[in-house]
Length: 376
Image 1 (cartoon, rainbow, N blue to C red):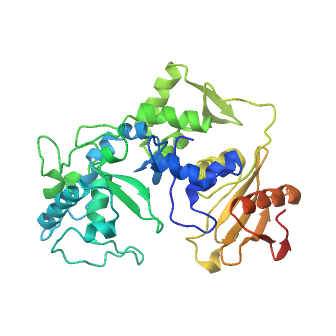
Image 2: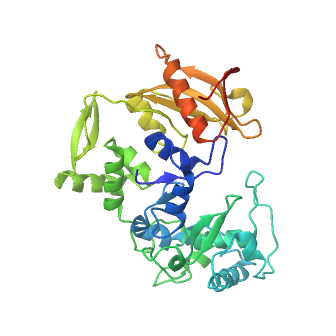
Image 3: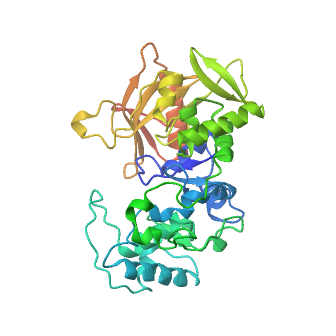
């Protein structure tokens, strides 16, 4: 994996824990916490796909994303409160000199006179301190040292997170026009206006190695890069022999040079909705002929397969959708609804995987569509 996506939904467990379970089986979650939150870190947070953990070295490949953070308006170019917001950013940078802290802790040590307002974020209205911290995080000027028990970011200066991280300074525009992101909303919307670039070649290389077989759109989506530079990177990797062009039942695709082609696949795994194998839905429709939606964002009356739906991988096929829920109060792992693909019913394999997961999560019982089963 070149990244693991982060999501706040904990219907089963926080989503970034599941891809490692799917690949490794039961493992101690505190070990992953240590690898992500203590030096030397295996991963650090950034907007590399959506919110995601990536190796610290990978952040160097997002120079334009960091530099052009001001293309989005966090509050820095508001005609009335923009100056106060920018002063708040500077105050937060000074506060973080004393060490990492959450947004709530930061709000207790910095002052600002900006009126809080409803921003229409589906009931989530971040404070001005939170917005300022998120702007600095997008710029790479600060990083995230960990997540607390409320799954809130613990913000920190990059040097306090990893010596490998870039340490850019806070800017609001280009060298020629340092106020561009403050004064001109139209100009700030133009991608590439800063003259910097992401290292799309290296990002495509990481994506190709992680995916093994991919179309151009799959490689571009992995780190949410544009198609044209991704296609240029694919051409360079083809010329270097790192990619080869292949035909997948009439579809032009690209194979990583070191990708294995085993005679058989013995995989068995429940996949998180944000797993890198499935987060680009067009790829799994193409390769697995499997139409998938998570459905947590679908109104209840329109849900087809359930609320938090995990694809079930068996061998080289996605054979079922499992609406899964860890009921912490009842200490029960509940598979509310299971939908098998036509001709695919592998109950013994699925129940064995559910038992494995239930024990890993510390459950004491398993409920499969209303039938109570022992975990042992």
